[in-house]
Length: 557
Image (cartoon, rainbow, N blue to C red; front, side, top):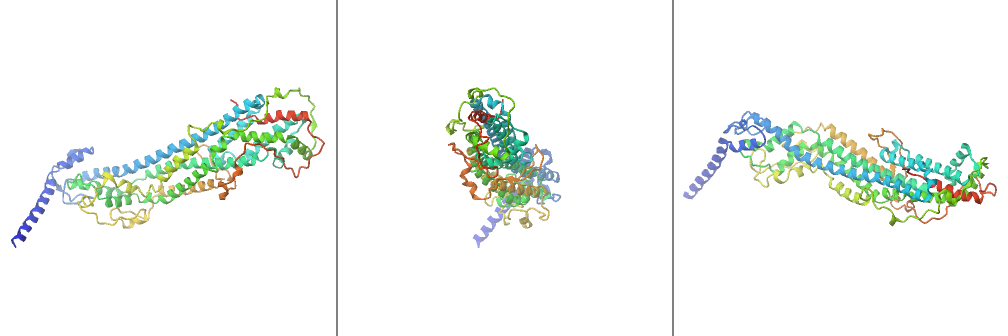
């Protein structure tokens, strides 16, 4: 009995001691004054000792070191502090993908420029003035490719541009290999109409069209996706917190001040419920965000493989020269079939001065392409390195929005175990952690969320992500869905390579061999060759010169 009495006395003394300690803290608000002042507020706002907390709107009432004025100021501070880590994470994400966009864009633009410079240098060296006099054709070709990269089908119809390029090249070469004849515009129109049947350049135009379409669509759509990511993150991060979120943040972060416990941190699960309530709309972005990232990753795989922009642009001068060699080797047959189908042209009335092959600047066949002799990078890197890096970043960005609460409610922002603030006292947080997203907030115990009113800004960004994902998927199949840009308006038509199957991954005929083999043109409707109107051996020599001429071109500087 005596023992029991002693125990009761001890327990009473312990409770009394704890009560006296808390009461002493409330009687003396010095710690609160120091902490409040460290936030940049006027220390005179804090009472010297606890006051009646009945007027408080958020924090527990009773004796308190907080006044209504302090509560309002701390509410604003809590809004800033709850937003700061989210803003920092969003800013880092924006910066990451702005940098990747700049790297890819600079790389693609430099590849285009390098290809033009390489063709110009090679053709000047090989064909001299014959090239220089016709450089405008190739210059326009690269200008059109650049416009297409920047603005897509809104600025350039790639199929039409390529058809016009080959038609113009054929016309120039055909005139040069048949300098002893005069050709009217109507006659050359007839030649152009049968370009596909004649196949004067072999299979190069068809292959190059498919390669260019796939590579350019993939490159420009991928870059557009990298542009979109920071835009979406920026707009979503600017969404303001609701009044109920600010109230819940104040209660979680600063109500411990009012009870004199300035060092007390919130329980982790309590913090999760508050953040999931505050970021409910942002979490709903996650599904389309992840779908978008998956589409970006799939297109990155295409850029590394069959739609590799670098593998198309780097040797494009060799591909064009191969086409010209095809025309050179088959110039007699092409001329015969044109004369058969379009009629015998009239001899030229003007006598041209005789020039030797040496005088024309054409000094031999085009030398085969040697990969070891070519530049290996643009913008100081390679496409493989760029895609390897960006894929890591894309994977890391998945589930960014739904994991924000876990990311914020960690480390020094929370207290482990039961020694934490649960919203009313220093004790275990008993409520269940609710799920992410707006619909789940109906049962949030700490934040009042109106689940019937989704945020308009975030819903609009969900729609933007859906649309961009459809563009990325189209580009994955080699199809161009024209994208409106700030530089060149909107509109345009959809075009593509017709690649809708896994064969895109293994279509080996999309890559060019550097070993030349003569290609005999097929002309079914123009007619068969005949002895009449065949170009003389002299004209064949001139044809070689003409061939050089056609070779001329990209970029006269």
